[in-house]
Structure formats: structure tokens, C-alpha cells
Length: 168
Image 1 (cartoon, rainbow, N blue to C red):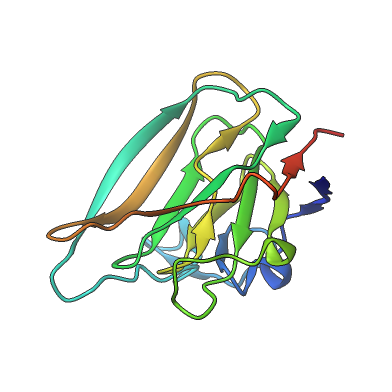
Image 2 (cartoon, one colour):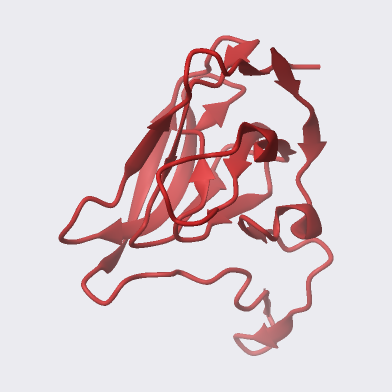
């Protein structure tokens, strides 16, 4: 049994998995006649040539913690971006892309705590747990891909692998 250590979500720590989208500590330039700060290109939407970018809202229920991590998913044809709408903290569990196969080394799985003003943009193919909110009916603005093909692979850990996340 391994309980994942929950790390603070930082741009540097999350770089192997995607982008942390936030304004704090980021460069900007002025637009709209000087009334607006634009924090430009904080993440990249990644799409295959057949896909189309879409915007959705996800509403999620809080899971029970400690949470057994039995599966992760990935999106091979496009990135997936989540931005919290209600300023609530949430958890992010990820694993690297790896060699492209349908397997995950459990020793590479990491957990992060995001603030309510940090979004995450999972790069194409990055393994991640479905939404892990810490408040019921929390909502996220989501930018991802629609189009032909199955853009969601799921990997289920063998029952001998015991990963969990516990709240501090």
C-alpha cells in the first residue's frame, strides 16, 4: 500500500504532465486601451488534425477520502484543460505519458493540490485521474477535443497495486 504524497501544484513540478494555468507570477501585456492585463499563452491546446476544440462545463461530486486510485485515463488525440469556476481547491493525480503503451509504472504516479485559481492543462497522452474535487457540485470550465476516434483510454491497475490519496 502506497499513499501518494500530495504536493503543491507548481509550474515546474507539473511541467512533465502539462501546463499550470494561472496569472500569479506570470508576465502580461496591456490591451483594451490599457484597461486589461493579458496573460498570454499560458497553455497550449493540443489537437490532432481531425479534432476540433470545444468548451464545456463539468460539475463534479466529492469523492470519499482516503481514495483508492484504481484507474487513470488519457486522451491520445488532444489536450484537456480544467479551470475551476468556484475558487475551491482540488486534487490532481497524474502519471507520465511513458512509452505510449497501455501501461503505467505505479512508482511514477504523483498527486498535487491545486488552488482555486490554478487551472491544469493535461498534455496529449498524459495519464490522469478523473476530476477530484474537494467540494460537492464544484464546476470547471473544460477545453478539450471532439471528433472521430476514441479519445479516452483507461488503465486499471492490477489489484496487487495499492495506491491511495489521503487528505491532510
